[in-house]
Length: 279
Ligand SMILES: NC(=O)c1ccc[n+]([C@@H]2O[C@H](COP(=O)([O-])OP(=O)(O)OC[C@H]3O[C@@H](n4cnc5c(N)ncnc54)[C@H](O)[C@@H]3O)[C@@H](O)[C@H]2O)c1
Image 1 (cartoon, rainbow, N blue to C red):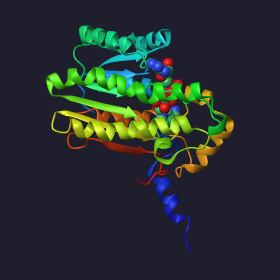
Image 2: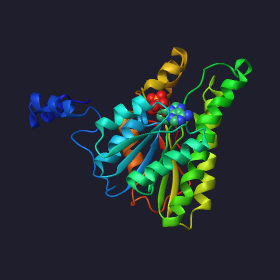
Image 3: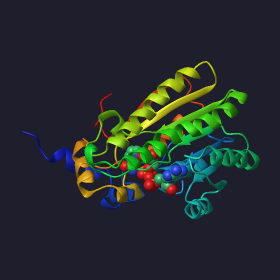
Image 4: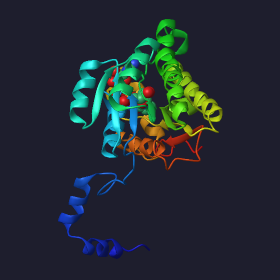
């Protein structure tokens, strides 16, 4: 029969104060984060005014990168850039190739040629059955979440080819692997991002450019405001870790994928779903 003694002896190793202090530093990671070397790199993060993109921009800056925050919400992008040392905010709508070309030119002029592109800008779109889904809303999700990734890659890849170096990471979703009900546009767009990643990874495999995507489970960001309560309630019990992913946890994976250490992985789909997907 299990005894309570081992637990008591563990508590002898640390005072209660130390025990609680360790959680106060960070509830999930413990006392710190690994150092990722992005010194001297120029990174573009789309949709980085808030949420996951903002956490990625923060992690990049902490790793030594100069970060261009591309977002269609310029006031929010400027507010975010003001809090991240070495970052700049640029107006960019990922659905508009002309807007991307201008943002890329401004990035190159102010921060240098891009080493890293993170395709993060996205929307969830409405939650409703497919046969009720307004076609224009369906198209808008595909336009931003999938064609936006194509537009940004199409603009940035030539600049990376010229220097034979680059890291491209797209934020797909567990929905793209598993399919979420009442989210057909979002699931299809994210499955498309996974396919685009596999294709582009192979196209560029013999260059110095690596192309990967991540498939997070739900993270509590402003995007939740676009979803129904029923949708959010559907997602949580599906996650074996029984919690939503933290934006910092996604940023940590993206930071490694953006580094030179990520050398022999391309066209890859990196899971970060708390155990929901096992492939
Ligand atoms: N939060 C989640 O549960 C979750 C889970 C898996 C994947 N994702 C993906 O992660 C990415 C970021 O999500 P988030 O939760 O941080 O969302 P968010 O709503 O907090 O932030 C999205 C940002 O993208 C910007 N944006 C939207 N459309 C744009 C456009 N056309 N051009 C440029 N910028 C645009 C918005 O202004 C906003 O700043 C999205 O691609 C999303 O699909 C999110």
